[in-house]
Amino acid sequence: MSYDISAFKVLIKKIFPPNKCVFTVDTDGNAKTDSLQIKFINLLIPFVIPEEIEIGDFNIKKFDPNTLDLSKYGELYLDDTKLNFSKENVNLDMIKSRLLIYHKGKSFNLDDIIEGKLRGRRINLNDSISLLIKLDDDILKKFTKGTHYFRIESDLVTNLEINFEMDENNMNIKFDPDNT
Image (spheres, rainbow, N blue to C red):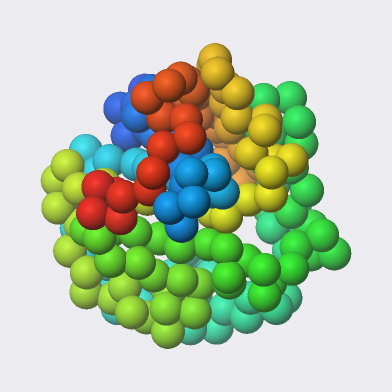
């Protein structure tokens, strides 16, 4: 079953402001960019992370990250380059060590999320949530000055594109966990 999210596409530009949603950052203070920060702003309504996260047949309590194959759900592109998220290409231990979610200066890794440590957390109107992903240099080099996009192609939802711009204000900056 496919869901039409075309009305949501207008809101995407507000939730992911093109020049304020993607950053290349230095997380360890050595003046070398090592991560990508993707930031979104809650412009809808305040909400609380529910006790149980269920979307269709998906239930976080039954989720086994070792069997996850994101490529079965759709394809992700950076500009015109398809990113490979097949089970054979994704190293779960690497994801656990390289992926963090930040809200109000507090970080959560994949294990924290699975264990339910986000449950009950209130996301207020205008709060931002950041996804921080440690990346290798060859991938970070693709985030050059100018206009880019992430595109999701899936049978589950209408194709979605998030446009963003890279310039001196969001490239090669020191990561500030309190400004996430």
